[in-house]
Image (cartoon, rainbow, N blue to C red):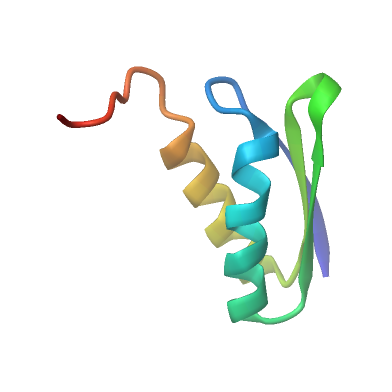
Length: 69
């Protein structure tokens, strides 16, 4: 098990955390905790799961992405 703290700059961790929790549920053991005051997500789980969730966070948090209309 590993733990990683991931800063999030462009998205609310309150909105992002439930999505990540669903991904952990389907992938196995792990935990996602959002800390609103610092807008960080703390991930705990198998290294492969934590790395995959970190990649998802980085893609979603990419600055300048706007919804298509």
